[in-house]
Length: 220
Image (tube, rainbow, N blue to C red):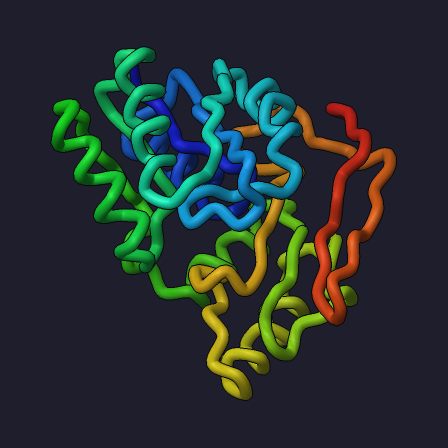
């Protein structure tokens, strides 16, 4: 089984696309559903809409639940991969050795081939690719210089310039590998339909916050 470790964000979606372009098309998307909002490994906001993204791509989807306890959450991931007889795993790892090393350790143990198409990619190159072919929005901000004005905004050319300025001033990672922000993909080349957000709310935490999708639907 060829599977993608899928969060609904820009990195895992782009990784699926690149893998498919190179002949490794995913048959299953696995989303880790963590009870811990501060999981060390797994994305949290809006993952309940991952099945809708999977439907838009025509790929099976399942959740694997975890309490999100550091290191122990890896046991849950391992069990999910084993139970679903995953032979190839596609991930959106870019620069976090913390995540990549742990996933590769599990894959080696289970005899799974790990593909990380974005590993080492230039952040600006990734963002430019997204701005041209994807509709990805920012759903969480938690870095100096960012505030709730970023929430719900598409990663497009003007946003790239804002992120470039933050990188120069504060040194933030433009791809959010340090947890500076998170994203959600509404449309992509692999989608046969796009996701239309019907209702949302903003949860504020001081200057920072999260864009919470409350309802959405697939449209042509």
